[in-house]
Amino acid sequence: MFSASPIMAGLALTPSDFALVYTLYGVASIFMLYKHQWMAERLGYRNFILTSLLVFSLGSLCCASAQGIGQFALGRVLQGAGGATFFTAGRMEINRLPADTRFYGLLAFIGSLLGASAIAPLAAALLLETGGWRSIFWATVPLAATIAWISLPCLSDSTTPAAERSEEHWGWLVWLVLAIFGLQYSIQEIPVGTESPQNGVFLTGLASIVALSVFAWRQWQKDRPLIDYRGLMQWRYLLGLALYFTGYFMIGASGFLLPIIFREGLGLSPGMTAAVLSFGMACSVATALLHVAAARRWPYHRFYMLSGLALFALGCLGFGLSGRLNDWRWLLLPTFLCGIAIPLYIGPVAFGTFSELPSRVFSHAYQVKNIVRQLGISSSIALATTCLQSQYSQHLALQPEGLYPEWAQALHGLAGVSAGLISPLTLAAADVFTWLAACMLPMAVIIARQRTFR
Image (tube, rainbow, N blue to C red):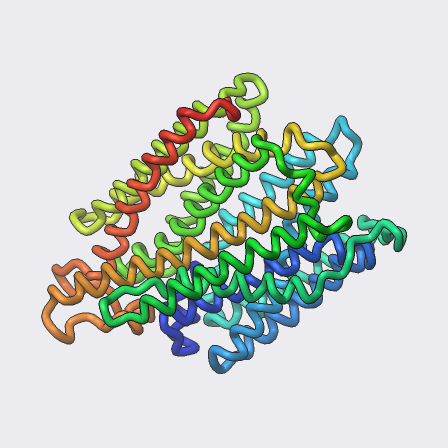
């Protein structure tokens, strides 16, 4: 997401093209998350993860050498299919640790996940400066090879006996992929103007929801489904999934908008933008680790979650004022607030969602959680793109003709500020942040009234 503008400019992609490619990445990830256990049963975790690293690397090579949207989209599909393994497999490996060391394994898992996210903008800025946007993808190939070399002796190659394995379900998975793509595409194509094909978008979304419902019903009837939903029908877990979706929606939307508002809207250099974003993520790392320590002694989950929502709303309102500020440094405060808010909200959800599930369904529960994660992030990016386009068009109409580019080129590094003027892209992003802040209010009411995560 940090490198979105250089990628779009280098491949002549519109923002909608980029959102569509991200949707394809998400669909491929969800497909493989459904097949995660199926693959691990037949290949063993060692072969499964090594194969996933290989597929991810092939996708990286495909993206790095792409000349247009077709090859780039193919590369992102391969990256989504390969990368879907890493999160779930990493978490499942922690369960293999002795019981008395699992907590420290979780700390390592959380710290490495958030720590890598914190340094990613700086790494991306360095790669963009030295090798252009293609180096973002070239760099992951030796990284994947290093991970394969380190993990090879640590992973189990045991497989599941044939009689205990999940069923195939390939035809139904194709059904699932089409349904998820249709739903994500319809979100992305929400009509912006009166001339948009509203009926077609609505019918596509409705048909996708029906198809997903049929898939879930069919899986419910299976003795050995891909994911055993029957073992997951517990109120705490279902509520946790809904809260997870909200949290990852917050992460996806803010992660998409922040590079845009700092780099394209306010005209900061890539290095300065990276430093600001890494500052926010470093705040997240520190807050997550402090929350883990505090929650063991004072497990007031609802208080932490409400605090996180309130801080995130304040941060978004701060970004909503970006069009009125004379100095971008004032935005460091909302960056800090959003950085500490998300782990305060997500942390209690992670603590409580799985606490009452039996161990036999933990793998299925974590697969579903990661499917929800991918849906939350890709949906937020698709919806944020649509909202940003709508607001940009409105603010552009108020500017002198020809001063700023049309929406298709707005994120190509061409929408920066003219002397003494505020970019319509900055104003549009500020509007979307304000709406995001407003969305926190109903969530705060729900969390305040629920009695499950106390």
